[in-house]
Image 1 (cartoon, rainbow, N blue to C red):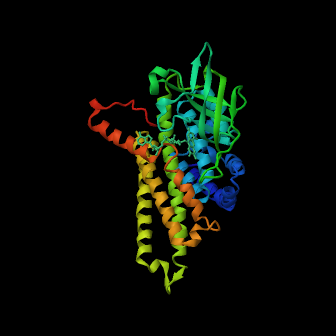
Image 2: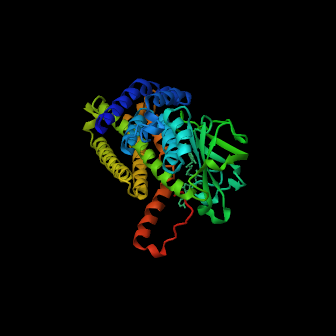
Image 3: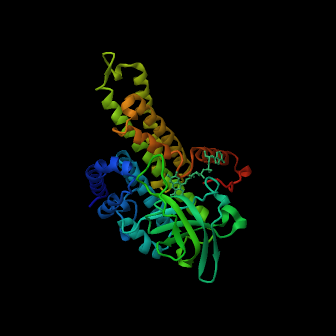
Length: 393
Ligand SMILES: Cc1cc2nc3c(=O)[nH]c(=O)nc-3n(C[C@H](O)[C@H](O)[C@H](O)COP(=O)(O)OP(=O)(O)OC[C@H]3O[C@@H](n4cnc5c(N)ncnc54)[C@H](O)[C@@H]3O)c2cc1C
């Protein structure tokens, strides 16, 4: 089978799955705040959780572009499911794929790719959000293991995950250069959750909770990469996940635009269709231009990644622009629908609530602006740049 034939099969499988399973359940998943477990299991069965991973680890060996395209379409149908997938694939599977040992890939990546296990990525702490350098979770090295103590907050999939990628400080004096990422598994002694699913503005089906680590013994073979190598792992993982978040933003915004384009041709006021009002036309035009710009920025970042070139700055640009665009477009979509937009009978208010998260998760818009500006300054005046700033890289 050629690469193109395989890609076509993946696209058709994804489109069928979204239409049959995801679209019909999305409203209820949001309303009932239910974790989309059956969607996850079905995606695992179909291979869709392993799109960018090698076949030897149960993946489909497709490009990152193919994976991002799937996330975008998924988000248009159910952003909670898309968010769950990004935390599972980009934040949990991806670092194992890029930095893990062959054993870690065989044992853990394969289980993530088939949906046998659900992944979570734990970086944020109650006192350490944008500022990773203030992390307090510590892992102390012993002969053949580490002992982990601390806690993580706002973790997607915390209450449902089987595999956790956890960042901890292994050399507190080195701050950002003293971080290490570990693979932990459900059932290890000393791991607990608060069992409380955080209630959120949007993405209500996606699980989010707290992880607590008390004297957890982690075998040394569970270190991702090597000791004090966490910054590199986090840098690459977050940059990749930002493209996932940008894809979610684009998917949500496209769905809002689709609804608007139908509605303005149906709804009449003052004997005119809505699309005949200049102010509505302005909103539709701005939606289109900003969506196209978001798609192009995302495409550029993804292309760089697929070509093996540096992509962190471009991923931040795509995430920043697409997320702020999604918030604006969904706000305008609610406005175009008037009272019906505000009503919970239609999905516009859900899209509006879901979009906001894309400006916060995987690094806020403010942090993306810092990354972009720092990179620009670094390129122009390398000698005076301090790369160990401390913000979420
Ligand atoms: C639904 C959801 C899911 C999440 N999932 C995960 C997950 O799976 N794993 C995980 O590890 N984390 C997760 N997070 C956490 C998320 O990454 C953080 O919330 C985010 O990075 C911001 O950190 P904070 O909330 O502590 O805000 P803070 O860092 O306290 O920031 C507060 C405000 O100050 C601004 N700010 C902070 N520093 C600066 C600065 N230097 N310059 C300018 N402005 C600044 C911020 O932009 C923000 O506006 C999730 C969060 C949410 C809401």
